[in-house]
Image (cartoon, rainbow, N blue to C red; front, side, top):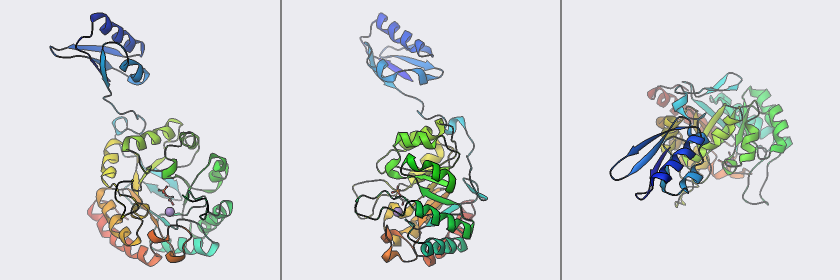
Amino acid sequence: MVIVLKRDCTAEQLQEVKRAMERGGVKVMVSQGSEVTILGAEGNASGLNQQALAQMPGVERVVPVSEPYKKANRKYHPDDTVVDIGRGVQVGGRKLAVIAGPCSVESQEQIVGIAESVQAAGAAAMRGGAYKPRTSPYSFQGMGLEGLRLLSEARQATGLPIVTELMSADQLPIFEETVDVIQIGARNMQNFDLLKKVGKVNKPILLKRGLANTIEEWLMSAEYIMAGGNDRVILCERGIRTFETYTRNTLDLSSVLAVKRLSHLPVVVDPSHACGRSWMVERMAMAAVAAGADGLIIEVHNDPKNALCDGAQSITPAEFEALMGKLAPLARCVGREL
Ligand code: PEP
Ligand code: MN
């Protein structure tokens, strides 16, 4: 952290600020220029109260120079993190992890059938919501407990690990028992209480980027989970809100590059929620792999027209198979495999 002093800052005020910084546990370097004087904090600045310092007499502004996230920061963990999600599947290694399945679990035949077809096409894990965050309270809210039970059946049939969204901490015990990866949805990315709770569980967390959140806010949410002791975090870019309305969201593929540089955590891309249009999914999935994503999470439905949720963005099992065929050579081009 660097503190820029006002031009008329007195020697006493400078000393006051310096002492306040030292009380926060850092050594202070004073650089007195002809135009500006700055105080630099050397050491761990996490004990400094930025807002209090900014309000002290003589202070013009406080400039943070290092990122506020530590555990998620590549600076302190240069190697890529590979997250083991069980059943022999890893996210973040050389092999791309493709997670596929319907938006929501709807029935036994639907979820088992889709799980079997995506597995045959090479998916590494399956997705399916049992608790759904819907904009309208009158829309299908998910099958709840019965949905979790059907997901377990699909896992039994295929051996694929299950990724499913947790909406409330009340469901945490049953999730710990039945799911392989806990998804924190875009709408809950800054539900700090929920983040703290999943920071305490022994399950990998798929953390979606919020609808209107910056990359730094997203990484701070990962930090919440990691600060609790859970370092198995997988980031998921799923599009952000912009002024554009043609697509459901705007897929921010540059965030994949940014996050891979800033953090050691693996990142997967969800082209389905990003675009909201099934015909865009294939190309955007390919673009995500080209951009360096560690995997994909894709909505696949056996009957998109009659899906209870997100049919317009769901591809069919046949389209998923075709996509996987196209991803394989592309993965090799970027030094990965499928
Ligand atoms: C989902 O995965 O079905 C979902 C609701 O995603 P998001 O939180 O990204 O909107
Ligand atoms: Mn969905």
